[in-house]
Image 1 (cartoon, rainbow, N blue to C red):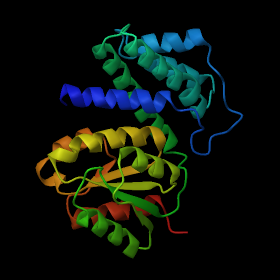
Image 2: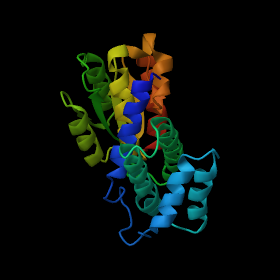
Image 3: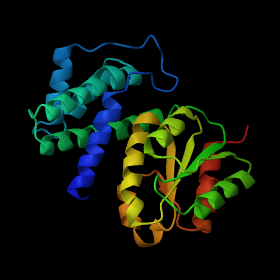
Image 4: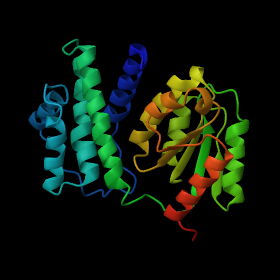
Length: 250
């Protein structure tokens, strides 16, 4: 990705994770195990250090000590992200190191997704769809929402929202499936930024991406890290079958 995009995504991770002060979905309010400042600093240093896996080992050590997922997230990674942001703003750490650190945070979050997928927030057949902020074409996402609705899913469609409002609405929603549409290169950066924000706000949600961008920019779309992509109605139906097996009708 171009450096400005990488910097934007790094800022998104630092801002959203660093400002996280509420519980994860269905988090145990008694699970908090506040980390000592020196431990948070060691984790932040590991995130930007020469050893690619040291920070990951530290996080897995926390799991081995039976510290719950939400406590690892809120009491360790979030303060470390805040610290990286402080070092960045104070010019104590260069941009290149912070992007390495945020990339490692994102990789650890992907591990969280695998862990959290075993305990989904809600197994109801519900999906929420939205075009990427700045997206002018809404026909495709409306058709996808209608397809899910016809198959008996509970469906919401959000239109016309900017990035912050859309993230807030999607974060508040408990639908296990989030569908996004992107038409091309102009909305690729907003798509990447939105997915990064949703990985923090909704770590167990299944994010799917469709739209005209899949025809000319499929490889770039997949770089944004969706769980699945839709290229046409046939692929949408196949994906629906897989999701319906995962989320049985109640």
